[in-house]
Length: 472
Ligand SMILES: Cc1ncc(COP(=O)(O)O)c(C=O)c1O
Image (tube, rainbow, N blue to C red; front, side):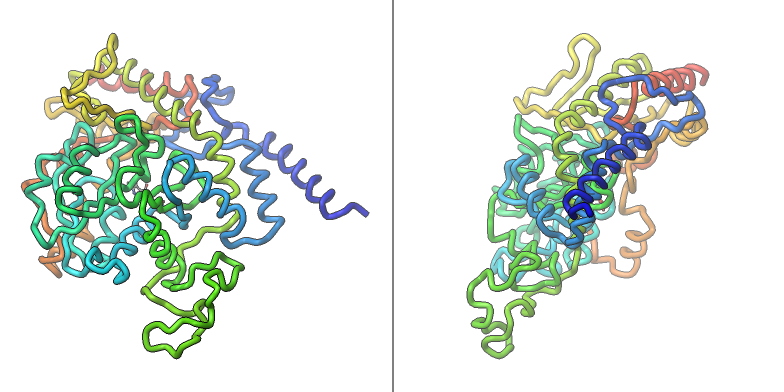
């Protein structure tokens, strides 16, 4: 009879063999091999997807065989490794990027923050064009989002409107995303937040690996968030994290909101970390009430599973190559499509003023520099172009080339927000006419740059776009 260890080793050996046989097409594509099974026009060119090898599959099976299931040893290790990669105090795993935004914002509504607590009716500056769950937690917590406009070329918040959005005594935070792997103007935003003593929550879900003046995004604000849904830079299937940049007091609050709202901070499976489990008196509970069952917040349960974290640990090892592949793929597309500028406005990194084949990006004279870890390749169809964005998207679809809108476009025009304005006009505020966000809604489209794209796929994408634009 084999020992359990021997049985496990055999299962894992077979797992690797199986994965190597059936997941070939998901292997990292940064070797730039021509996919042997790629048939232009028949094989789908996804805009994003999972890229992994035998290591992720083995890690998932190994952790599943151990059957701890809920967040445990793998989660703890991944949280440490991710925090180390980012250079933040700590990272706390949750089950999605949306949960990360919800928990991050909710933590700032804790009464334990005293005068820094975000209360109902307080205002939070955000940006109109983007993904809905960057903004939803503000409203779900009874605060008021104040939407400023986007610069359509970078996709990020237009800094011209920050001061106009500010109301002394009401504005408490800025919460916005680095759009499609392009850092927003962190110099302007951090200075604004410092000047007015505001919280800064960076939604870094689409921007893992971006740098601003050489420093990783997600490390400038008080809290930042990641998503590990498959199209993102790393995938755990589902998942996300809340990153605590500097203040350790925020970690306990984030964990409380993630874990049912409890006051206790014991890790899963542990008791009496505080050493006074039966010595607390909080609220109107009797003295000695078990600390494990004392609730300081109206929380949730948003933990992922341990096998997901095991997958994440393997993905993290691939991250530097993933980031480079995204940059290389973006540069390939930009160069090969350069002669289409009469039809298309190509996206630019924040602080860049132009791009040329010879010199790459030109920069403004601010002295600040961004390094994008691109989520996608965004294009804006020029107003005078002989085709519409819709026609362009339909042509890509017909050619089996994955494409996406810039998520929700101008969010205030989405049915959920229109209804909110109708039911509760004071529930949100907008600054100016939001024309930039409207342009993103009407004219922006993006295609993939993810590491699973092969040279053959990218060449086919270029050929298809060239033919479409020239025919029109
Ligand atoms: C900017 C941004 N924030 C948050 C999310 C939500 O992440 P998740 O899908 O993991 O909930 C997304 C989704 O892609 C996103 O693009």
